[in-house]
Structures are given as C-alpha cells and as structure tokens.
Amino acid sequence: MGWFLKPRLNGNVPNKEGDGPFGLNIYVHTQRQGLRILYSPIYHTATRLAFGGLSTPVRGYLAPGIYVFGAEGPALPAPVFEDTPWRIPPDMRIHMLV
Image 1 (cartoon, rainbow, N blue to C red):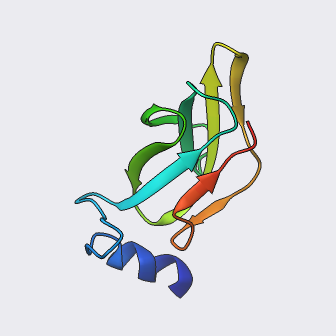
Image 2: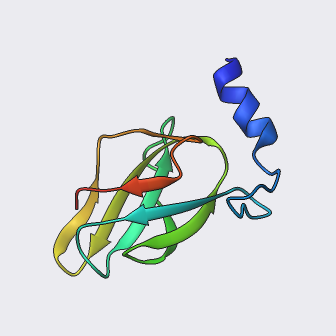
C-alpha cells in the first residue's frame, strides 16, 4: 500500500521536472501524428478522459497512480487502448505503439 500512497501524497510537490500545480508533468508519444490521447486510471478503465492536445508528443499533468493510455483519430475507427499499465511516477514519458 505504501508504494501507492507515498507518490500520491508527494505528487504535487514541484521539482526540476517542471511539475504542475495539479499533478506531474507527463509526455505521451505515439507512432502517428494528430491522435487524441485518452487515459484511464487502472482501477476504472471505462473512464477514457482526454489528455492534453493532439499527438505527438502531447504534454499534460496527471496525479501519481497507475494508468492505461489510448488514442483515437481519423485513422482509427474506434478508440484503441493499450494493455500496458504505466506507473506514474517513475514513468514520466509514455511511448505508445499506435
């Protein structure tokens, strides 16, 4: 439980990475340009929240936790979520396969 709570409690402390007031500074990279990035907390993957602008890369802020990322856009008929869970921190740069 400590591995989950400690980063959450320390998540809003600015550091040299340039963290924002509401979370940690995260970059998401994709293989294709112009995709809308989506994210969901691992415990509730149906959330599908929009993350920042269009790829790639896209920058945004997330509270510490474990997330899955997806993408949607003109070349994708439906939103595509990857199975890889990303733990934030230490993962601050997400590299998607779409």
